[in-house]
Image 1 (cartoon, rainbow, N blue to C red):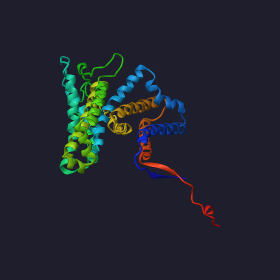
Image 2: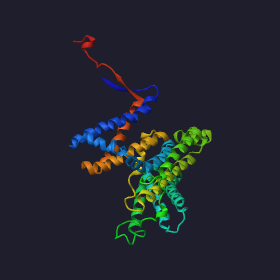
Image 3: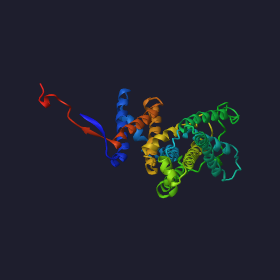
Image 4: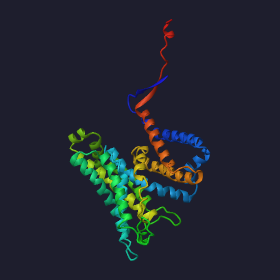
Length: 361
């Protein structure tokens, strides 16, 4: 028989192997799910893991999906490393999109190229403002940042709906709840013709390098982590836990807002009620699968974007419901949490107690 026992020290091997095992378990459960639904499991795996990478165009769409996930998850990695639980990145994404969309609506055909940086800055400031509400309530009133940030997601969604159904609705849009299409001058520059990949992926990769330097090569990054993980030690060393809270939430909110700006001024091109795509929640999984490390987050974002694209293809080609994407995301998260048990615990095998073994009758 087997039982779990505490390791003398956390396993470095399972710290890196746990996400891989979680992915393999997710694939295995996915195969069983396809069989249970009467679908060909090979075709199911193909739409999730082969179709998103089989051609240059498919790879471009993979990067388009990965860009917001990567940028948001980088910001969340700072929060979680600082022991600040920002669960409301989705709301910060939406408010960033609203702020960026508001600036984009001011543009006309004669507006200069400065409008693109202005849109991105507006998105960052919008996300920081929304995250700043959580930081203020936590810092001033000791409110729980999990509940506050999560509830603000719904406020952000309602604000978006109010604007696209009301003041910002396109009068020539046949009564659809959407703004007018943004002018071409506001379009986020694309990297190549025939692909929707834009400079957002470059910003994301720059963020990976910048966050690595900040966390592992600067005094500020060290104090940020210590302030969140060991407040008494931080106070003894003269670090400010309040500052760590504000820095973590503002960085996270700014990153989510930037992702929102890139999304509405890039692939979407206008504001609609469908701007909230769940990226803010999926990025939480991305951050943890990537082990809160910038490089790990980069690969995790690619994996999660495969689930998004695979879910869309599974709807059209296999007749599966839209929720299949969320099912795979949830499976990956739960399997990761289960596999992470092996970091602090190990299996110990022993023979069951037997009376006959002791010579009993």
